[in-house]
Image 1 (cartoon, rainbow, N blue to C red):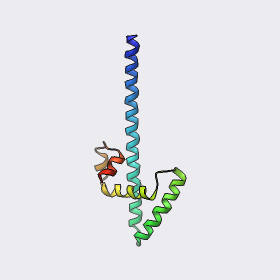
Image 2: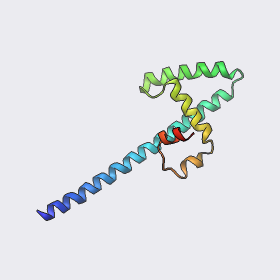
Image 3: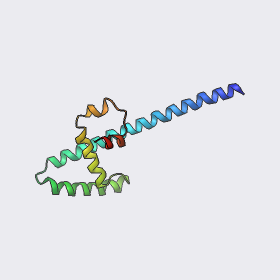
Amino acid sequence: MLEATSLYNEIKSLIETAKTKAIKAVDFQRVLLYWGIGEKIYNEVQQKQNRAEYGKNLLKNLSDELTKEFGKGFSVVNLKNMRQFYLAFENRQTVFSEFTLSYSHYNKVR
């Protein structure tokens, strides 16, 4: 019985480690995605003359299209937050060289 318990604990530890690593990998990809979306939005709006009106329409239309295709998470507010995230951490290396925080942590920091 002792051997089975020991084997169980070792396997349990492997599973928990793998789960933790998977969660961190997914969150890292989410940070990359949101930073990239923020960069694209910022660059697009900056290239237009009448930025305020264009930006308003751009975000609304983008939000509608992304939400249709990918579901929740792409509201105008979230897209603005992604743009702000990019602006707060324009130097990509700052965000990714010491990746230890989730997107929600970065969002609170800025």
